[in-house]
Picture 1 (tube, one colour):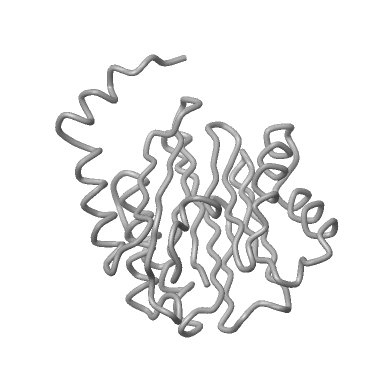
Picture 2 (cartoon, rainbow, N blue to C red; picture 1 turned 135 degrees about the horizontal axis):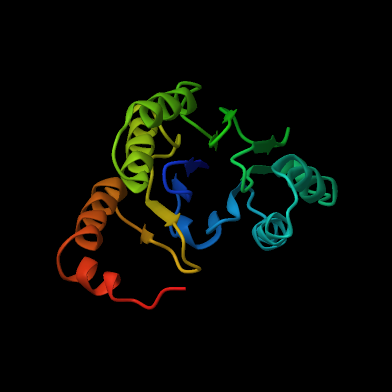
Length: 212
């Protein structure tokens, strides 16, 4: 149904999450992150409560593995869920229930977590991991590269209709928060949105926002 990536940029401490799916409005429920805290993606037969409980646990200092364990063991529908979590240290953990629709994939390493279900094939997640590791530049562009590679490798078995990217740097509000809720070419539209917010008038405006 969805493929997602979490990432931590050790050069500036930023956390990011990017996701795409065959349905509309993936940015509404799946991707979550917080500055200095970590990131999370809840998908499959999505449980949005994972995000709120999970991010609160991460902010309280719990590690990624402990958060995944607590969320899934307390959910009677856990076999229908897929979840990836990254804590403030960059440690990652994940869960793929047995009730998910094939193909299912997951890649976990320090500072990067990738997961997908109802994928066209098992090449999608490895393609995302390779693209992210090879990409350079700002975190949001590396996340877009991973989504694009996943889509090219087959992506969601249904095709994709929505996509989103969020990054948090050193503020309580996101550094980047762009989403395409419905499109025949959501990654192209997402790329255009990134160009609009990263330069020009919006970037000038963003630079003037109050900071803590």
